[in-house]
Image 1 (cartoon, one colour):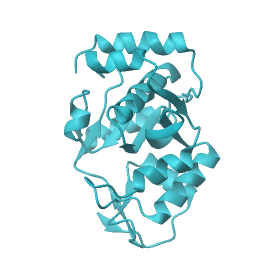
Image 2 (spheres, helix red, strand yellow):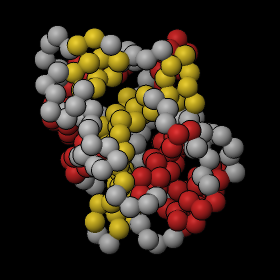
Image 3 (cartoon, one colour):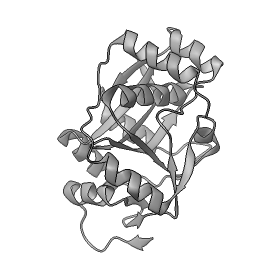
Length: 221
């Protein structure tokens, strides 16, 4: 891990992701960034993502509405916000601004979960070729971030993506099938994925989404 010695631009950020690097700040108010390329990388296999039975019921229900790229700025702002169970965040103001720029350029996407018209969960990340780099997620009500994650995976599968990078492993992600791979293995996977021509489906056919959910329900992590 090393401190950033130069001003970061969207173009430089994309070059770094292509090489397997990603930036983090020490705190929300920090004015410096660090590049990370961990020895073990978190990866969520797109054809190994398991949807629990209870979550499948919620996916089939009408409690939540899910969108993509509907409000990227609000989603990253919510991911960066301090919460009682997470008083500090690695998303500083520079990262937030840079990722909004990437979104405006078409290289970053968000998935939003809504309840009664309010944004209650979501996630965002970077898309390069057939690789999607998941950055952060948030939830203010039960299951909202899980719903967003399931929709992300379904969209990536439909769009022809081959790699979902989660950076690190958490117990939450491990329950869905996330694994750690060595740095060298990850770099090989990344080099192959960024050459794939994929598209991020913003409004996929609802029937196609349901078919992906059903397929994932049967997959074992």
